[in-house]
Length: 265
Image 1: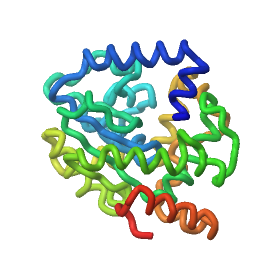
Image 2 (image 1 turned 180 degrees about the vertical axis):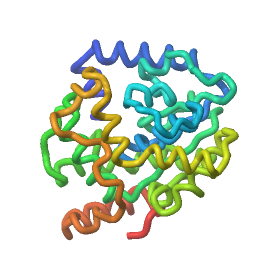
Image 3 (image 1 turned 90 degrees about the horizontal axis):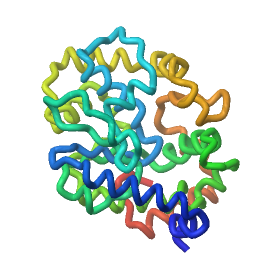
Image 4 (image 1 turned 120 degrees about the horizontal axis):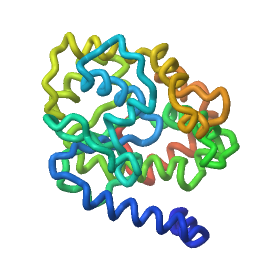
C-alpha cells in the first residue's frame, strides 16, 4: 500500500488536517507565485537564507533566526502558507518538499537537484534528528524507506523535472554561487545587483547559519534531537566515499528503473 494511504487509514485525524491544509492552500494560491521544489536536503536552507537577506533590504549584518527565514518562503500546504506576504512588489516564493501537484501547474517552477548519494547522506542525519519522523536507522535502512528513501527521491524528480522552468543543481550553487544565484533571482524577477548578491552570500555562511539556528525559537529547536546542526558541511561528493558496493548496486537499479540521468553514475 502507498505509505501515505497507509498513514491516512491508521490516522484519520492526520488525513483531515492534510485535506484541510491542501484545500485552503489551493484557495490561497496565486497565479504569480514562484514554486521552489526541493527534495529534502538539496539546499533549501541555504537558498532561503540568501533570499532572506536579499528581500530584507540586503542587511548583511542582520542577526536572523530560522523563524525569520521561514517568513520569506512559506511552504505550500503548511500553516506558514497563510501568513501575510511582506513583499508585495515581487511574486511570492513558495517552497515545497512534495512531488508535483496539478494545482501548481500554472505557476513558474524552479527545481533544485543534488547528487543522490550526497542527498541520502545528508538526509540520514536529518531523518535521525527530526523527532516527528520516528526514524532511527543507518543508510541502508533509509534507502529502502518508503517516504524518505531512493523511491521517494526519484519519484520526486520524475514528477517535477518535465515541468521545471529552471533547474538549479546544488553542485553549481557550491561551485559558482554568484553566477547560479544570479540565474535564480533573474528567473524570479527580483531586481538586485551582483554586489547585493555577494553581500547576501557572505551573510549566509555556514557559521552565520549555525548561529541563526541557535537564535531560533524553542518551538523550532524542539522539533529535533539535541545536537542536530542544519548547516552540517555544505560539501559535495561525500556520498561516493560512504556508499558500499551493495548500496551502489541498489542505487544503480533504482536509477535504471526511474530512467534517471540527471547525474552520472
